[in-house]
Amino acid sequence: MSQTTASPKASHPRWLRLTHWLNALAVLVMVTSGWRIYNASPLYDFSFPNSITLGGWLAGALQWHFAAMWFLAINGLIYLAFNLFSGRLKRRFFPVSPKGVLHDLWAALRGKLGHADLNHYNQVQRFAYLFVMVDILLLVLSGLVLWKSVQFPLLRELLFGYEGARRVHFFAMALLVAFVAVHLVMVALVPKTLWAMIVGRKEQV
Image (cartoon, rainbow, N blue to C red; front, side, top):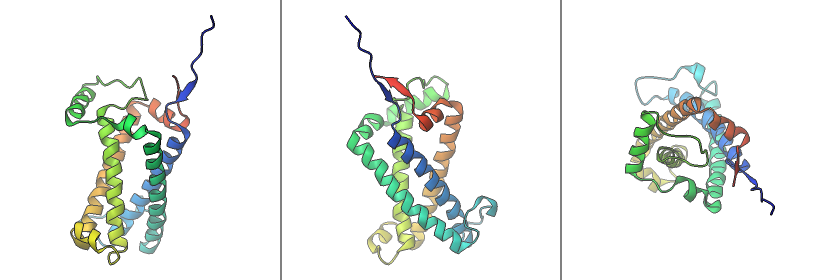
């Protein structure tokens, strides 16, 4: 009796890897050009070093920012659509609960959270990825108010006016940068996750 060999399945399919890296590029351009825009009219008593900003001057930064905005919005929608229609969003990111997040966070802090199966997201990862999706949505919505304030009066009021939208946009950006920083630290601690996101890792199913 012959034994059937299971076909390998990529832990990260091509569409996921492509949209992930395009999103990462768009976020990098938006954040660094946004810092240059912020420097032209700071909200708080500090500015970002020009060496880590993009655009050279305000008009150049705005051009980079708007270009990356459309890129992020379109690519983000493609990423979300694939996750929804493939069922991956439900499989990978749910269920998630405060108790489960705290349990897995405590395990991670003690170095007892396993990473053997890249197909499985622990609840800290699930919460973080869901959070960043919502955060990017908030960035886009507040950015629309800053870009076309008159055309989006209801959205402007929901975000406490133009100045309120500026602050929402700033803090959403700060949270996104914090997510990226933690994400990079975790990748450094578990480098095989980076390789899987570059080439995909084959799993037997």
